[in-house]
Length: 453
Image (cartoon, rainbow, N blue to C red; front, side):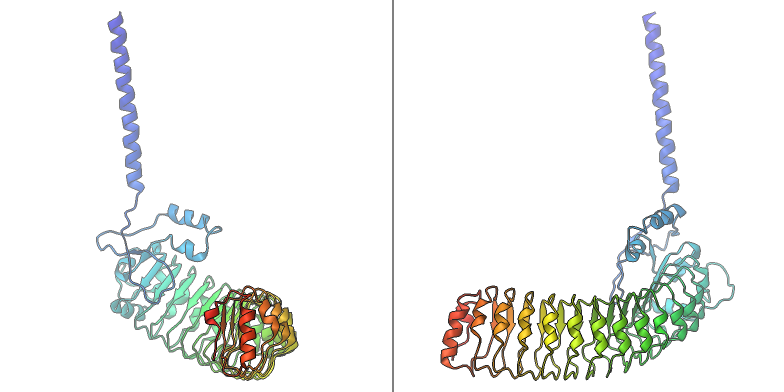
C-alpha cells in the first residue's frame, strides 16, 4: 500500500513539472515572437540639436510595433517632445527606411547619395522598396525628419504630405528656399533652417499653427513675412546672424513668445508692437544698429534678461523701469551719456553692464538695486560714484577701470560682500587711495588687489 502511494506521488510531481515546463517554454516562445531586434549605433553629430539613437543594420528589417508606439504616446503628457521622440528609433539610411516606410518615425540623413535621392523625390507611384524617385509622402507616420550637413538645394514639395511631422531639421544643407507646401505641415512644432543661404520665407509658413520653435541661425534672411504674428503658438524665435533690417509690426501678436534672439543683424529700430509680447522672458539684440528703443518696451513686464550690447543707443526710455522681473541688463558698447532715474525700480536686477559708454554720472537711484551682484561701468567718463552705492549690500563684483575717478564715496566700505574690484588709480589722490584701502578692509577684497601708485 505504501509503495503505491509513493508511485502515485512521484507521477503527480512529474506531471506538475512537465506542465510548468510547458508554460515556461510557451512564455519564452511568445516573448521571442514579440521581440523585435534593434541594433543601435552611435552617429557623429555636428549640427543636429537632438540626442538620437541610430539604426544602421543592413541585415535586419527594422520595424516598430504598434505597442511600442502606443506606449510612447501614452507617456507624451509626461515628456517633452524631444524626450518623447528620443524613445523612437532613428533610420539613417534611405534604402533601409524605404523597405517599410509606414514604420519609420524618425529619419536622419546626411549621406550625399541619400540627399540626391531626396532631391529627386516625386509624388508618383514607384516600385516598392526602391529609394529612387520614391515619394516622401510614403512616410505617412514620420514625426521627425533631419537632413543636415550636406547638399540639398531644393526640398521636394511632397514634404507637405508628412501630416504627422513634428520636427524638421534642415541645418547646413545649402538650402536656398522652401516650397509653399511647407505650410501644410500642420503638426510641425520645431523647424530649424540654420546655416542655409535662405533669403526669404514663403508666406505659407504662417499656416504652421502648432509651431513652437523657429530657428534660423546665420542665414541670409532679409525680411520676415508680414503676417508672422499668425504663429500664435511660437515660443522661441532665433534669427541670430541674419540680414534683417526691420521686424514686422505683427510680431507683437506672438503672445506666447518667450525667447527672441535677433543678435548680429542690421536692425536700426524695433517696432512699437514689441512691447505687446506679454510672455517674453529673454530678448537679445546685440550687434545691431539700434539708436533708440521704443517707449513701449516697458510693457515687457515678464522680461528677465535684456541684451543690447554693441548698438548705437544714446539714451534709454524711462519705461525701462517697469520691467520688475529683469535680472540681467547688458548695455555695454553703446553711446549712452545718461541713465534714467527710473532704473532704480529694477529691484530684481542682479547683473548690470554699462561698460564702454559715455556716462559722466550714475543716478542716485542706483542704490535701490539692492539685489545687484555684478556692476560694470568700466570705460566711461565717471569722476565719482553716488553715495548710495553703499546700499548695494549683495554686490560681489564691480568694474570701474578706465574712468577718470578722482573721488570715491565712503559708502563703498559698506559693500561687505564685495570680492572683486577693478579700478585704475591713476587719477585718485593719495589720500583717496589710503581711504579706499581702509574701506576695502571691511569687504572681501584682498588688500593686494587694491591698486596703488
